[in-house]
Image 1 (cartoon, helix red, strand yellow):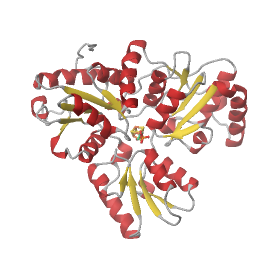
Image 2 (tube, rainbow, N blue to C red; image 1 turned 90 degrees about the horizontal axis):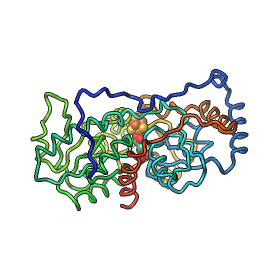
Image 3 (cartoon, helix red, strand yellow; image 1 turned 30 degrees about the horizontal axis):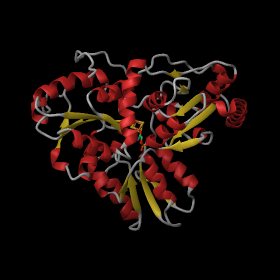
Image 4 (tube, rainbow, N blue to C red; image 1 turned 45 degrees about the vertical axis):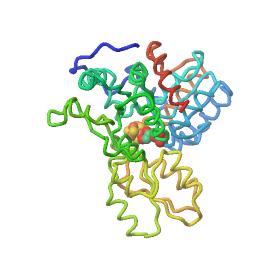
Length: 377
Ligand code: 13P
Ligand code: SF4
C-alpha cells in the first residue's frame, strides 16, 4: 500500500495550491458585457467541438449562460468523465478542475480560467496535515480498520491519500452511500474536511451517537486517543458560506410566511438541516424548485448565485434567499470572472493554453482510484 512520508506539523501550508497564476492582461480588464459576450461566442464558434464548458451551480450568470452543462459537483465529475472535447474549461474551483483532470483522458486539457478560485474549505485539510494526524489516530486505535473518506471539496493529494489507505471520495449527494461503503469494509470512518456534512450524514444513517469532532491542533480539544473511541471521526473543517445560516433565519422565514418551504445544503450546521424541510446537494435544490407548484415559496439556504439563478429560471415560484441580504456569495467561485473566460478562450483560438490544471502523475493515479470508487457506489 502506498503511504506518504509523515509530515512535520509545522508544514508551510499555502492557500492557493497552484502558484502558476497568470494575471488577466490589462486589455481584458474592462470589457463591457455586450462586447464580451460577442467575443466569447465568436471564440466558441471557432473552437467548435474542441471545447466544452462545465459550470458549477454557484457560478455567475455570465459564466452559466455560456456553459454546455451546469450542475452539482457529482454531475460535473460525470460530465467530465464523458466529455470527449480536447479542452474542458471548468467554471468552478480548483478541486473540481483537478478532479476533471484526473477523470479525463491524458490527451484532454483542463483549464480553470482563474487560478485564484480556491475553496477555503479544501485548504482546511491539506494532505500533509492529514498524513500527520493519520499517524496519531492509527496509533491510538491499532486494532481498528479506519477508512478515510474525503469530500470532493479537497485537493487531489488528499484524494490520493484516502485511496492509499483504502478510502474514497464522496460528494454531498452520495456521502451516505460512501459511509455505508466504508462501514462494509472497516470499523471506523475519518471524514474530511467538512464536519457539518459529516455530522448530517451520520444523522441520516442513525449514527449520531458515534461522532467525535477532531482538530488535532487544538490544545483544548480532544486528543487522538479520545476521538479514536468513536466510530465516526470528523475533521474540523467547514464552509463559511453555509455556516452563516441559523435556525433563527428559518424561524423568521416561517414567521413571515407560514406556508414557506425551506431547503438547505448539507454543508449547513446540523440544527439548520434539522429545521429545514429538505436538505440536499445543489442539484437537489435545483430539482426541488423546478418541481415546485406555481405560487409555492421556497427559501434557499446556499450560495447566493444559485438562489438568483433559481429566481430567474423559475419565475412562477417564489424563491427567497434564506437569510436575505446576509446570504453570501462564494469568494472562490466568484474568481471565475467572464473576462478571464474571454481571455482563455481567445488564447486557445490563438493556439496558447492558459491556466492549465495538471495533477502530478503519481497523485493522479491514486486520486483516480478514490474517484472511481465514488463513481461506482
Ligand atoms: P454540490 O456538490 O452540492 O454541488 O456542492 C459543492 C459545494 O462546493 C457546496 O459548497
Ligand atoms: Fe468551498 Fe463553500 Fe465555496 Fe463550496 S461554497 S466552493 S465549500 S467555500
